[in-house]
Length: 102
Image 1 (cartoon, helix red, strand yellow):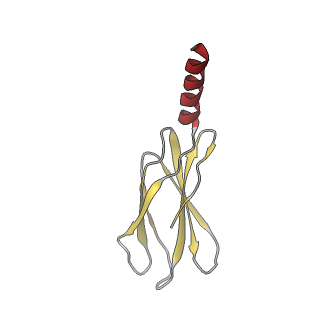
Image 2: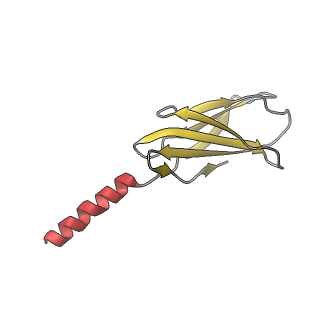
């Protein structure tokens, strides 16, 4: 019995340390040179969210960081009539979660 209890406790610790991704990426307030990016929070203990974006057909990647619990930002200075790829990465004290791509 004590072995099962110990395993359950260890699994609980592992779950708390899991680097969960942000969820539900959405885009709104689109203009010719900006748009708003919004996402649902990742797991507990997120310090920052790193937003990386670039032109979908190439171009230099740009990064913006926002402090949790904020879950949105406006990307500016974009090119008109251009498609962008966006990734949101939850940053934890001891590592990053997987990217949420859109």
